[in-house]
Length: 617
Image (cartoon, rainbow, N blue to C red; front, side, top):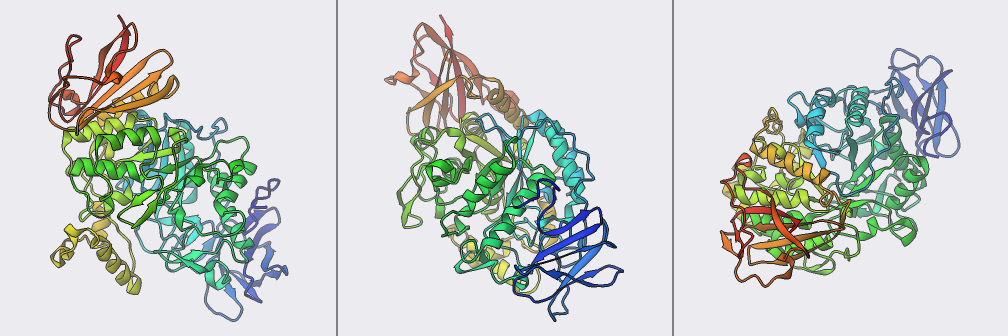
């Protein structure tokens, strides 16, 4: 049981009861656990005989600060299930009442899985100048007006230092104090729900960040069989019943006490589990058991592209809803920048790649992948488009460059508008990174506030990572790499004031088309087919029940489509194509457009996207 459904209490941590505070912790390697309370006598917890220690302390109350001491170790340790670390990851834990906030989202039913969604990724520390949940609340109305339906929040578990990405969380139940009080987070999510926006949390279950103390409570938390690029792997399969319970409780905690609507699971390929039932599958079934009346949305980052994650449980899958599609990003990056070094080398950015991405999900479904010198991917031909999340920018890919430049700084403006059209009008779910919708001038690089050996290793790791790019291999490049540990690097990533500029209008209009056009929102869409026009241009035809759309994208020069021996460009029976929309409209920063004549073949303007709809003759 990961939460008592009657008392609404977690099985671990500090829970408020009528007769005091109930403390409970798992420490199977220890004989004694001493609870050290602020301004109160220390108390030994009672050994339950199963590795757990617990006690009700009548004198403790909401706001009480506490530590644990283990056996004869004089070190003061925070609670592994601390709900709040007001003084940082090594400070005292604090008793929190999770039911102070009066929720107003009783009618909210979660995130219904369909293709008209638009995801918006944010990093709370840089999303606003203040870097808090309360300041972020002020931006929610603008996101709703843009048409965002899901916010993907980068990790928020308490982490070392004064700034960071959050993927090095060490107190997994504690929203970081850097962004505000836990009730501020509740207020953010409640307000998002009032505006029709779901909120999913990026969780990291492949490793724990430096400075964590889980190992002193039990040596079973970390695997002896596996390792990751970032630290010790979590043990989910070797005498791991209570470790699994710890993480499943964490899942229920975020959903129940904060009303999150789902999760983005970080680097799921590094969540190792050779037991009979993979932990990701158990997460999926546990959520369904506890939240029968709410639709929870689970997406995963999975570099090997294992579609088993999105197969239903009853078909031996893990029951997640969607996977991030790196193939879309990589093909688009090559097309827009002309660079295909390192992990971009297996992409050419050809028209056929984009047609295949739209029709089939992943590009690599088991073919040989030269960069890794092995086969990559699993079949995705039969999955619905909404099982894939496409993106042009996210935190990783922006930072995987020398200066963390945004795509608008390195791509041709016209082709970026055309690619944005493809992103936002494809049947797959699109993801935007904070500021993308108005071409933010702030860059996004890697930053972390480490010290000592961890800082040294992190800096060296960053340099070595960038060296995989031949263009960044020279020693002279090193002095230009932003200092990971410098606060100026962090501050430079903060978003400036939101702009309603040409780029914003482009995104808003396309998102409105996605939401309200019956073909683009999927409500009347039957299927999509596509054809290559030339080496730089292609078309996609959206077949509907009563109406159709034709999207033509030309990344090359102006082109006269003559002859035109391609049946997909022919209008439906008793219909004609009429102009619907162009990415080259001056209000989007374009140079203008010509409406193709109904007589003769078409002139296709370069670096642009055109949309046509059919109309009865």
